[in-house]
Length: 129
Image: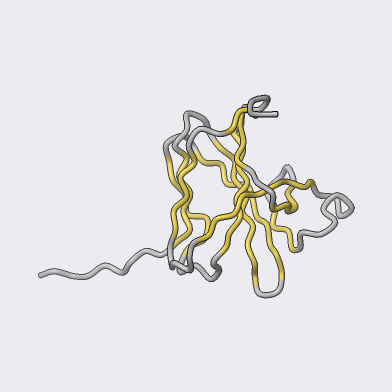
């Protein structure tokens, strides 16, 4: 007898590098922006960051290799801190006692599930002028 399994719907992140990576996520929760972190993802592994059907089209990710060699970021600035966190609001990060980090945008196209693959990061001190 065959049985159907329910489809899995999650926001997953896979670390395809040779180092452990720390990950923070930003998203819209009703009228508020929320940032959460840190997930420590071992090399060549995956983790579900948001379980269940995705409620937003856009999510934001900031990640850094634990040895501080590389990072994945962008131009969407949100609040983070060194320890585990859930922060509501993205305004006045430093004045509220947090750090400010640039997140990159994920456009899920309103899909119910999405997987992000992190490959080799941008190395500090490289790039154009």
